[in-house]
Amino acid sequence: MLKIENLHAEVATADGAKQILNGLTLEVGAGEVHAIMGPNGAGKSTLAYALGGRPGYEITQGSVTFDGKDLLDMEPHERAAAGLFLGFQYPVEIPGVSNVQFLREAANAQRKARGEEPLTGGEFLKLAKEKAALLRMDMDMLKRPVNVGFSGGEKKRNEMVQMGILDPKFAILDETDSGLDIDALRTVGDGINSIMRAEGKGVLLITHYQRLLDYVKPDKVHILAKGRIVKTGGPELALELEREGYEEVV
Image (tube, rainbow, N blue to C red; front, side, top):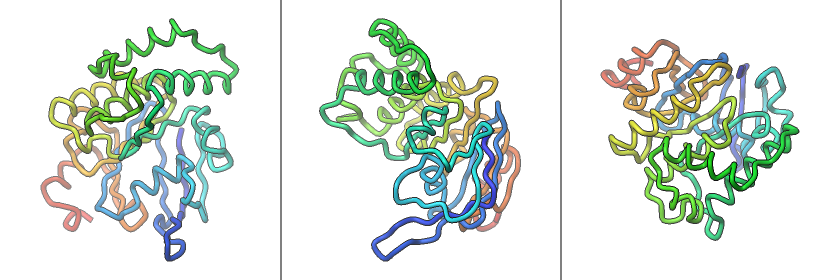
Protein backbone atom coordinates (compact mmCIF):
# COMPACT_ATOMS: atom_id res chain seq x y z
CA MET A 1 0.00 0.00 0.00
CA LEU A 2 2.80 2.41 0.94
CA LYS A 3 6.19 1.66 -0.59
CA ILE A 4 9.20 3.88 0.15
CA GLU A 5 12.47 3.20 -1.65
CA ASN A 6 15.84 4.81 -0.98
CA LEU A 7 14.29 8.04 0.27
CA HIS A 8 16.56 11.03 0.84
CA ALA A 9 15.14 14.29 2.17
CA GLU A 10 16.46 17.60 3.39
CA VAL A 11 14.96 20.35 5.52
CA ALA A 12 15.28 24.07 4.91
CA THR A 13 16.99 25.85 7.83
CA ALA A 14 18.33 29.34 8.47
CA ASP A 15 21.80 28.02 7.62
CA GLY A 16 20.69 26.29 4.42
CA ALA A 17 19.37 22.83 3.60
CA LYS A 18 20.11 20.04 6.07
CA GLN A 19 20.06 16.39 5.02
CA ILE A 20 17.88 14.31 7.36
CA LEU A 21 16.74 11.14 5.58
CA ASN A 22 19.54 9.04 4.08
CA GLY A 23 18.24 6.19 1.97
CA LEU A 24 15.17 5.12 3.95
CA THR A 25 13.34 2.06 2.61
CA LEU A 26 10.06 0.80 4.04
CA GLU A 27 6.91 -0.99 2.88
CA VAL A 28 3.55 -1.15 4.67
CA GLY A 29 0.94 -3.49 3.22
CA ALA A 30 -2.83 -3.05 3.25
CA GLY A 31 -4.31 -4.09 6.59
CA GLU A 32 -0.99 -3.61 8.42
CA VAL A 33 0.11 -1.38 11.28
CA HIS A 34 3.82 -0.56 11.44
CA ALA A 35 5.49 1.35 14.26
CA ILE A 36 8.59 3.49 13.86
CA MET A 37 10.72 4.22 16.90
CA GLY A 38 14.02 6.04 17.20
CA PRO A 39 16.04 8.58 19.18
CA ASN A 40 15.55 12.33 18.91
CA GLY A 41 16.82 13.73 15.62
CA ALA A 42 16.61 10.39 13.83
CA GLY A 43 14.25 11.72 11.16
CA LYS A 44 10.86 10.39 12.32
CA SER A 45 8.93 13.67 11.98
CA THR A 46 10.82 14.54 8.81
CA LEU A 47 9.56 11.30 7.29
CA ALA A 48 5.97 12.15 8.27
CA TYR A 49 6.17 15.70 6.92
CA ALA A 50 7.87 14.63 3.70
CA LEU A 51 5.14 12.06 3.03
CA GLY A 52 2.46 14.62 3.81
CA GLY A 53 4.02 17.19 1.45
CA ARG A 54 4.81 19.89 4.00
CA PRO A 55 6.66 22.89 2.49
CA GLY A 56 10.33 23.12 3.46
CA TYR A 57 10.83 19.35 3.32
CA GLU A 58 12.37 18.44 -0.03
CA ILE A 59 12.76 14.92 -1.40
CA THR A 60 16.14 14.82 -3.16
CA GLN A 61 16.24 11.15 -4.10
CA GLY A 62 14.11 8.01 -4.00
CA SER A 63 10.46 7.16 -4.63
CA VAL A 64 7.20 6.75 -2.73
CA THR A 65 4.24 4.79 -4.10
CA PHE A 66 0.87 5.02 -2.38
CA ASP A 67 -1.96 2.72 -3.41
CA GLY A 68 -0.24 2.21 -6.77
CA LYS A 69 0.29 5.94 -7.46
CA ASP A 70 3.35 8.19 -7.33
CA LEU A 71 2.82 10.04 -4.05
CA LEU A 72 5.59 12.55 -4.69
CA ASP A 73 3.87 13.68 -7.87
CA MET A 74 0.83 14.86 -5.87
CA GLU A 75 0.16 18.17 -4.12
CA PRO A 76 -0.63 17.91 -0.37
CA HIS A 77 -4.40 18.29 -0.92
CA GLU A 78 -4.27 15.60 -3.62
CA ARG A 79 -2.53 13.23 -1.20
CA ALA A 80 -5.29 13.86 1.34
CA ALA A 81 -8.01 13.28 -1.28
CA ALA A 82 -6.28 10.03 -2.27
CA GLY A 83 -6.74 8.81 1.31
CA LEU A 84 -3.58 9.85 3.18
CA PHE A 85 -4.02 11.29 6.70
CA LEU A 86 -1.24 12.97 8.70
CA GLY A 87 -1.63 13.26 12.46
CA PHE A 88 0.64 15.98 13.82
CA GLN A 89 2.90 15.77 16.85
CA TYR A 90 1.78 19.29 17.76
CA PRO A 91 -1.73 19.96 16.37
CA VAL A 92 -2.16 23.65 15.56
CA GLU A 93 -4.81 26.01 16.92
CA ILE A 94 -7.05 27.84 14.44
CA PRO A 95 -8.82 30.71 16.23
CA GLY A 96 -12.14 31.79 14.75
CA VAL A 97 -12.80 28.52 12.89
CA SER A 98 -15.17 26.06 14.53
CA ASN A 99 -14.26 22.39 14.59
CA VAL A 100 -17.61 21.45 13.05
CA GLN A 101 -17.26 23.84 10.13
CA PHE A 102 -13.63 22.91 9.53
CA LEU A 103 -14.35 19.19 9.50
CA ARG A 104 -17.43 19.46 7.30
CA GLU A 105 -15.53 21.53 4.73
CA ALA A 106 -12.59 19.11 4.81
CA ALA A 107 -14.80 16.03 4.47
CA ASN A 108 -16.84 17.49 1.61
CA ALA A 109 -13.74 18.75 -0.21
CA GLN A 110 -12.37 15.21 -0.21
CA ARG A 111 -15.72 13.77 -1.28
CA LYS A 112 -15.86 16.25 -4.17
CA ALA A 113 -12.34 15.25 -5.28
CA ARG A 114 -13.49 11.61 -5.34
CA GLY A 115 -16.66 12.46 -7.30
CA GLU A 116 -18.97 11.80 -4.33
CA GLU A 117 -21.98 13.81 -3.18
CA PRO A 118 -21.37 16.23 -0.27
CA LEU A 119 -22.71 15.42 3.18
CA THR A 120 -25.76 17.42 4.22
CA GLY A 121 -25.70 19.24 7.55
CA GLY A 122 -27.74 16.49 9.19
CA GLU A 123 -25.63 13.69 7.74
CA PHE A 124 -22.44 15.36 8.88
CA LEU A 125 -23.66 15.99 12.44
CA LYS A 126 -24.71 12.35 12.77
CA LEU A 127 -21.25 11.23 11.63
CA ALA A 128 -19.49 13.73 13.90
CA LYS A 129 -21.50 12.60 16.95
CA GLU A 130 -20.66 8.96 16.21
CA LYS A 131 -16.91 9.60 15.94
CA ALA A 132 -16.84 11.98 18.94
CA ALA A 133 -18.55 9.34 21.10
CA LEU A 134 -15.96 6.79 19.97
CA LEU A 135 -13.20 9.05 21.32
CA ARG A 136 -15.25 10.09 24.38
CA MET A 137 -15.31 13.71 23.28
CA ASP A 138 -18.22 16.00 24.11
CA MET A 139 -19.92 17.43 21.01
CA ASP A 140 -19.69 20.89 22.60
CA MET A 141 -15.93 20.71 22.05
CA LEU A 142 -16.49 20.30 18.32
CA LYS A 143 -18.36 23.59 18.31
CA ARG A 144 -15.32 25.42 19.70
CA PRO A 145 -12.52 26.89 17.53
CA VAL A 146 -10.12 24.19 16.31
CA ASN A 147 -7.88 23.12 19.23
CA VAL A 148 -8.17 26.55 20.94
CA GLY A 149 -7.98 26.12 24.71
CA PHE A 150 -7.62 22.34 24.39
CA SER A 151 -5.22 20.39 26.58
CA GLY A 152 -2.56 18.27 24.89
CA GLY A 153 -4.68 15.15 25.33
CA GLU A 154 -7.82 16.88 24.02
CA LYS A 155 -5.95 18.00 20.90
CA LYS A 156 -4.88 14.43 20.19
CA ARG A 157 -8.39 13.06 20.73
CA ASN A 158 -9.77 15.81 18.51
CA GLU A 159 -7.33 14.78 15.81
CA MET A 160 -8.52 11.18 16.06
CA VAL A 161 -12.11 12.44 15.63
CA GLN A 162 -10.90 14.21 12.48
CA MET A 163 -9.38 10.95 11.27
CA GLY A 164 -12.63 9.12 11.93
CA ILE A 165 -14.68 11.65 9.96
CA LEU A 166 -12.28 11.78 7.01
CA ASP A 167 -11.96 7.97 7.01
CA PRO A 168 -8.55 7.74 5.26
CA LYS A 169 -7.02 4.69 3.61
CA PHE A 170 -3.69 5.27 5.32
CA ALA A 171 -2.77 7.19 8.49
CA ILE A 172 0.66 8.52 9.44
CA LEU A 173 0.47 9.33 13.15
CA ASP A 174 3.38 11.36 14.50
CA GLU A 175 3.72 10.77 18.26
CA THR A 176 -0.01 10.64 18.84
CA ASP A 177 0.71 9.36 22.35
CA SER A 178 2.64 12.45 23.52
CA GLY A 179 0.82 14.44 26.17
CA LEU A 180 -1.66 11.66 26.96
CA ASP A 181 -2.42 10.32 30.43
CA ILE A 182 -3.20 6.64 30.96
CA ASP A 183 -6.94 6.91 30.32
CA ALA A 184 -6.54 9.13 27.23
CA LEU A 185 -3.88 6.77 25.89
CA ARG A 186 -6.29 3.85 26.08
CA THR A 187 -9.06 5.91 24.46
CA VAL A 188 -6.85 7.03 21.59
CA GLY A 189 -5.52 3.50 21.11
CA ASP A 190 -9.06 2.12 20.96
CA GLY A 191 -9.96 4.89 18.49
CA ILE A 192 -7.08 4.01 16.17
CA ASN A 193 -8.09 0.35 16.26
CA SER A 194 -11.76 1.09 15.59
CA ILE A 195 -11.10 3.52 12.73
CA MET A 196 -8.06 2.03 11.01
CA ARG A 197 -8.09 -1.71 11.79
CA ALA A 198 -9.98 -2.56 8.63
CA GLU A 199 -9.31 -4.42 5.40
CA GLY A 200 -7.47 -2.27 2.88
CA LYS A 201 -6.24 0.32 5.39
CA GLY A 202 -2.78 0.92 6.83
CA VAL A 203 -1.07 2.81 9.66
CA LEU A 204 2.44 4.14 10.17
CA LEU A 205 2.68 4.88 13.87
CA ILE A 206 5.61 7.06 14.96
CA THR A 207 6.34 6.90 18.68
CA HIS A 208 9.10 7.23 21.26
CA TYR A 209 7.62 4.78 23.71
CA GLN A 210 6.26 1.26 23.81
CA ARG A 211 3.18 2.15 25.89
CA LEU A 212 0.85 2.98 22.95
CA LEU A 213 1.78 -0.34 21.36
CA ASP A 214 0.08 -2.13 24.28
CA TYR A 215 -3.21 -0.92 22.77
CA VAL A 216 -2.36 -0.70 19.06
CA LYS A 217 -0.59 -3.98 18.35
CA PRO A 218 1.83 -3.42 15.43
CA ASP A 219 2.61 -6.03 12.82
CA LYS A 220 6.19 -4.75 12.62
CA VAL A 221 8.41 -2.37 14.57
CA HIS A 222 11.19 -0.44 12.83
CA ILE A 223 14.07 1.48 14.41
CA LEU A 224 14.99 4.67 12.60
CA ALA A 225 18.45 6.11 13.24
CA LYS A 226 20.51 8.64 11.30
CA GLY A 227 17.87 8.91 8.60
CA ARG A 228 17.38 5.24 7.73
CA ILE A 229 15.79 2.05 9.03
CA VAL A 230 18.51 0.14 10.89
CA LYS A 231 16.52 -2.70 12.43
CA THR A 232 13.11 -4.33 11.98
CA GLY A 233 11.29 -6.84 14.14
CA GLY A 234 8.00 -7.75 15.75
CA PRO A 235 6.33 -6.15 18.78
CA GLU A 236 9.00 -7.69 20.99
CA LEU A 237 11.52 -5.22 19.51
CA ALA A 238 9.69 -2.34 21.21
CA LEU A 239 9.91 -4.16 24.55
CA GLU A 240 13.63 -4.69 23.98
CA LEU A 241 14.08 -0.97 23.35
CA GLU A 242 12.18 -0.19 26.54
CA ARG A 243 14.53 -2.41 28.54
CA GLU A 244 17.85 -1.75 26.87
CA GLY A 245 17.63 1.69 25.21
CA TYR A 246 18.58 2.67 21.68
CA GLU A 247 22.37 2.47 22.08
CA GLU A 248 22.31 -1.18 23.13
CA VAL A 249 19.75 -2.34 20.57
CA VAL A 250 21.13 -0.43 17.58
